[in-house]
Image (cartoon, rainbow, N blue to C red; front, side, top):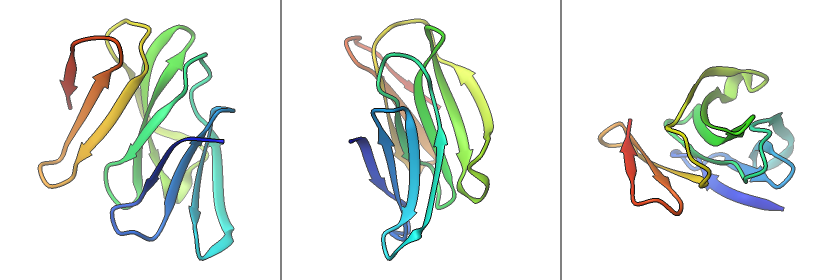
Length: 116
């Protein structure tokens, strides 16, 4: 079941985060092009958004720590980069402003939004 489904900026692919902590990237025209990778392993549902046509940023909990990861869809098997958000337990929702090259991180249950 999908918990976060988003189209790529150019409209050619769909990214789907699922309850089993997997991220799937597929071309809806051909199911054979589906790629998948295990993302964040914590108890909260991971979220993600596209930051360009080939790059996805995800958020989730790993070992009780709120983390983010950057993924290149041309080689989805490993993260390009990773880091931590400030401590907390709420789900981190990500939103990308492609025009201004900003990523907003909104922390559920907290009155805070971070910019990257």
